[in-house]
Image (cartoon, rainbow, N blue to C red; front, top):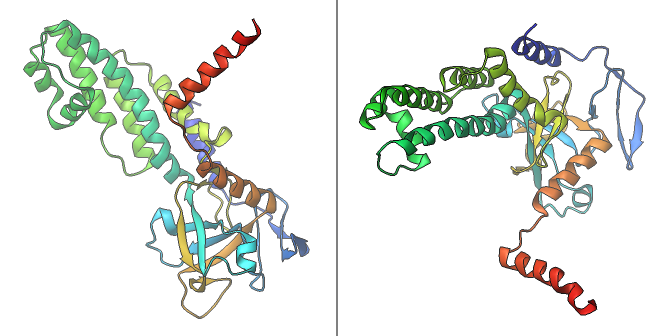
Length: 312
């Protein structure tokens, strides 16, 4: 089984339903009653209509046309803000993106930049030997999408061997920068681009390079995201909580259970306390660091360097 097939199989397995999910006896967590999931592991617990809205609740948009940024939301507003109405009816949330959406939106661009960089390096080496006007990397990249690579090589008046290499590099860059509409399409473009570029790898190695980049956020998540296997009943295809985008929902627009009244969102589950707390902590850490000027860092280092002079 090749790398691409194994990755596809893993995705298919992850999408399978969580079987034998049973409700355990009602318990208390932080003074609020809730249900936990028994049997196969899940990060969420089911919650009853009588349970108040709290941090860690998962909301689902009623509108089937909701964007991926607002389709599923995780409540970040602190429980004490709910208890004392400090939030003034505004419920702060972060989006829960389907894994394929997150990887397509966040990881594919990173992998693309790495692959473009290697092709651009080859192109720069070719242009360094030719008598051509100065062209920025940005302009070269734009040019590759505007005109046929072979025509660009002619305009640059490159010699035959260099023209072939430059055409290959430009074609690879053009393919890499082609917009994709989903994860499968994005992966396919990056794989094929490597195969038409300079020094093309074997297909299995081209696939592996892209797939390894997609696997990273699962085991080593960036500071602004966290993978969740499931966020509610029937929502078990894998999701990433993305902590850099903040959404607000009016509390009256949230239905806590089956209701006949109109609502923009309905609550479908509640994250188990450990995950709710971990997500809230990560959310705080995203916005906590404050960058300091380079001049300060240079002076700080200088003070550290001269510290020992008084004791010599």
